[in-house]
Image (tube, rainbow, N blue to C red; front, side):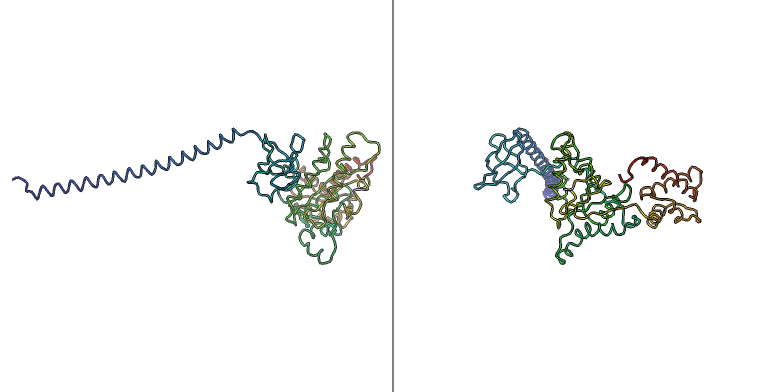
Length: 397
């Protein structure tokens, strides 16, 4: 039977609806693809712009480095180039005026020497390596005896950093610097580490011999950079160990090497004079030979407070022995006080060495308990070795 008009119309409507839905799905798919392509295009355009910018940077001529001497009016300044001469140049308008200070490092245009940017101050890698990143683990509990010396050191270094208002209320200036002197191994460095542990200051340790350089002027430059680094990282503690390496008395007759050491010393004296006692930088020096230091270094205004760190007495030797043996497996009947009486003229470092040697004697016998005989053998070994080393020499070295 032939289809009626209504049946044909219904079939056509179904076909039209199906075709419309198919086209709508196709349109949505194409729109999604278009969006993805637009994202990819934007990404490629960004990469293109970055590459053009990088290529433009590579095509730019190199810049000279210089030092800003003085800022003038009308957007000009006086700079000293790295090649030597000084110039009056134009300052780029994009550089904020408040960051243009004398002695700043600047980048100069190759042709007209215009100031294009401010460069960060350079620091010698040797100076950066002097900073102790990890706070020392030593505390005041690790120090046996030296109560008066530790009190003096804390009043000089710790109090001005943690409670500066006390000095303002009393109306006095804290000591500018402190000098620790005494025999080797008496605890000078340990005291400084304990103070650095208690404060949140940057701890910078300098060995005096590190400031002695081969070329003329290098030692003085290092001293300047060390003190500048301490200022930039304040609050800080600058500890100069083995101060006698650069601070010995100056001689009228000297070799070229001695004269270079003297130049370094004079720069150190100049830096010490330039420090404010109420600043956030505290200077500590340590030496075994205070008798050979230059008088200019010892006068008030540089190292104001001198703290002698002597060898421990019997009571202090006992305290030090207890500190170094607290983690040892010691026989119960061992009398540490009696052991301490046998350590005549032993320093804190000697006592630490004796405890280690006592443990080694126990290990040598394949036992896990340290006995009195092990301590006595260790004392005999360490003290006798020390006497042999110091035989014919002044012990205060």
